[in-house]
Length: 407
Image 1 (cartoon, rainbow, N blue to C red):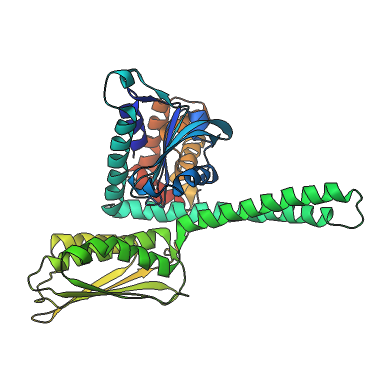
Image 2: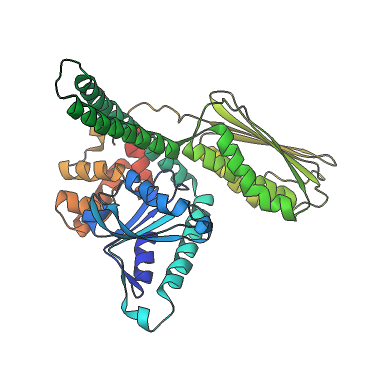
C-alpha cells in the first residue's frame, strides 16, 4: 500500500517534510507506512512512535485529531516533528515540517492536514476490514516473525543489563555514589527494553477479554441507534491471548454477521459469544429473526473467505421462524508446513537476496538501496523469481518464502 507516499504528495503544497510515517495497529503485519528519506524511515522504531503518542494522549481532543509539534527522537536522531492523532487511534508523524508554498494563499495548513489525515486513516481502516485472504496470510507471517525477532533481542539485551546490574551492585566495588548512579541508569534501560517488548507483543497478541471489549465498542453505535438488543457473553478473562490478525479478523467477522442479520426483517435480538479452548477462538452469533440468513449470500460468502484464510471454519444453521445460528472456529496457531527444498527453486544468488529482503518486508526501493542496484533491476529479478517459485503476486511470494523458512 503506497498510501504514505500519496498522503505526503497531497500534503506537500501545505506541509513540506523530509519523511512521513503512519503508525496504525489495525495492520498487524505492517503497522508502519512510510514515505520520504530512506535514511530516516528505515530507522524509525515503534519505541519512537510510542513516545510521540505521549504528548497527544493527555489531550481530550485526541480522538478528533490532536496535534503536537516539537523536537523528538525520530529515525534515531533528535529532529523537529509534527505528530497528529486520529479517531481510529492511528498516528501520523512528519519530520522536519515546514509550511509549503500554498500555505499563504490557500486554506489553513492545519485544517488541510487534519482533513487529509482523517480521510487517510479511515481509508486504512476500511482496507484492512475488507482485506483479502492473501493479506491475512501475509499478516500472520509478518506478525510471527516480528515477535520472534523481538524476543531474541529482549533475551540478549536483558542478559547484558542484568549482568551489569549484578556487577554494579557488588559490595566489592568502591565509590558507592557512582555505583548507585550507574545502577539507576541500567535499571531504567532494562525497564525501557521490557516495555518495548511488551509493546511489540501487544501488536501481535491481544488478551481475549480486551479484544472482545473492542468488539463491544465497535458495535456500540448499532446498539444505540438500531433499537436491536445486541447481547454479549463475555469470554474467560484468563483465556489465551489472541494473535493480532485473529483478533482483528474475529471482530470484522462478527461485525459483518451482525450487519447481515440486521438486514433481515423482524430481528429484535442478536447474541454474540466468544470462548477460547487454548487452541481455537470459538465465536457464536445468533439472532431471533425469521431464519432467512443465507450462507451463499455475498456478504456472508466474503466472511467465509476471511475465516478460511486463517484455516478456520464457519457453519450457518438456519431455523425458519426461529432465527440463524452461526458458529466460527479460528485456530490461534498457523498450520505447520513441511519445509520445501529451496534449492529446487534454482534461484540465482541475487534472486535469493531479493527474495530474502522481500520476505523481510522491504519494498522495491529498500531492496534496491540495500543491494546497491536500481529499482528496475529489482523488478527484473522479481519477475524471474516469481516464475521460478510459482508465485503470481508479491504477497504470494512472501507467503511462500515465509512458509519455507526465509525471513
